[in-house]
Length: 114
Image (cartoon, rainbow, N blue to C red; front, top):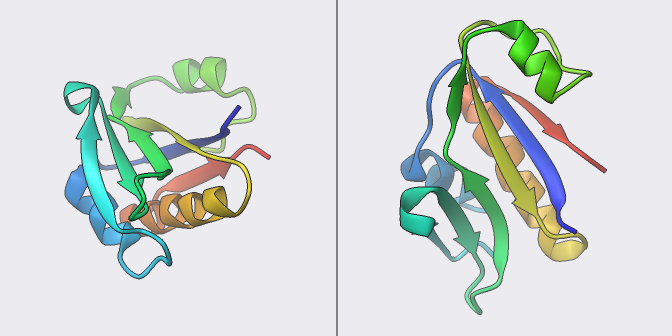
């Protein structure tokens, strides 16, 4: 079971924003789209996934956010919701770091389930 990460941001993001967030993270070698663009992955050189981020969905009501995330922080509406997943262990730590850098670059909230 991978680590679940939720990113709530006031703006949309794409493959380029994720690639920028991955720059300088040890082990991050490439970024690719998967599932016909439904998600973007950051990979190590050996092809192991560090982080998978699904395309953001725009949410317009706080009730919808609270239904999906009962302990949701206050966010500005509308907000973009992105699900992301990183493996457990050392590989996953790099993935979590990338997710946190993505959120920082977007001025977003990043919630990592531990």
